Figure 1 (cartoon, rainbow, N blue to C red):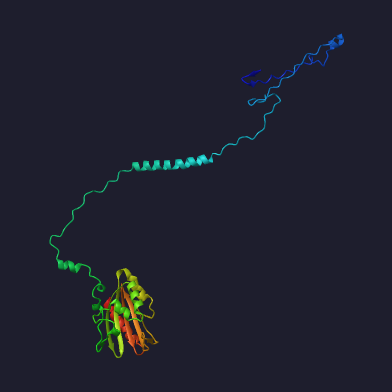
Figure 2 (cartoon, rainbow, N blue to C red):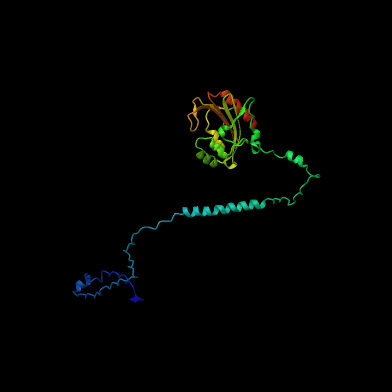
Length: 297
């Protein structure tokens, strides 16, 4: 019987009793010699296979074996839940603790009125109490030592105008390659050079205070940090040295012995130079450098 396109499975046939089995004759039939006609057997109708048809389960039918579905692990959901619940619980506990505390009072908005002196300030007293400018910001010529007794003025080999100042051009001209030295001094931030020069006993002496621009204070460091020689006590990177080998004047075959001392105070470089026909005395060189350094600081 077919209903809504689904074929019903036939009911299982009941086994015939031994008395109805045509293959077995009863004792009565044998004895009477009568034969029992065989019942007509109808062919069994098998249901047609369809897409929605499943085989009927019978007493001898075993369920098909297949893999059992495993249980999903619950560790990940528990961890995610703990991560989400932890901050919420912490925030709730923190809020409850803070809510139970007393309110912190705010500071007063009242600002005290400024107090002014009862009498006008004395300008002279104010100027005296004000910080004094550094000596190196004033006239550097006032910080130079004086030439010793019995010494004559020296023209610094023709470089200078007698004012006590050396311009960048005059300073560069005192070197062999004046054009190169001029560009170097300008690049290094050369500002001014105060000088005193004298001659005595056949030797020529020159003491300078060379100052650089505030933006080029590192130039003063480079002028003194690279010098070698004996340490000049009490100075910053101060050294003094008397050369043992003679030097040649620029564009000349004449020779001379040279001694120099350098030290730095801020952006000012102290330089002492001695030109002599014989070996320069280190004691004399050191003494002049110490005198000038004391006036600079």
